[in-house]
Length: 121
Image (tube, rainbow, N blue to C red; front, side):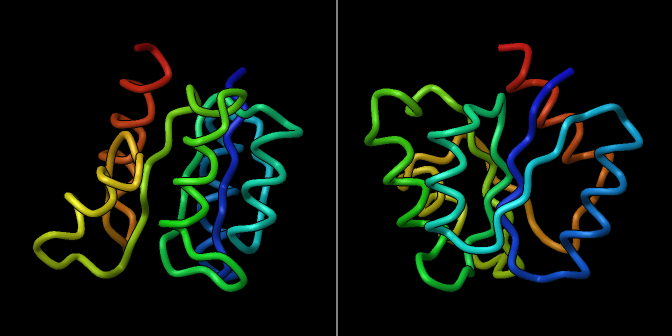
């Protein structure tokens, strides 16, 4: 069973994604801000991180850079999740160290395919 760290401050998005991932037998750990996401990435060593980019305390861009700069967590794949689907956002996410990028509202089939690709890489 793959362990997924979901870093999401919006309760509705968090609950919806958590329920859908649990139904597919993923083990889900939740962080509600970027700093907590970094701490849980270090302590829990998830198989994959779903990172909201607009977060309190530390935004998703900074949290991803921090995770990727740490040799202990650098290998964990990160998928950026953002409602700001503007041109350049994908490049910005990849430049911050994200391995992939997806937009909100989440298209679950598309997100699961991206997760599967990264988990089986």
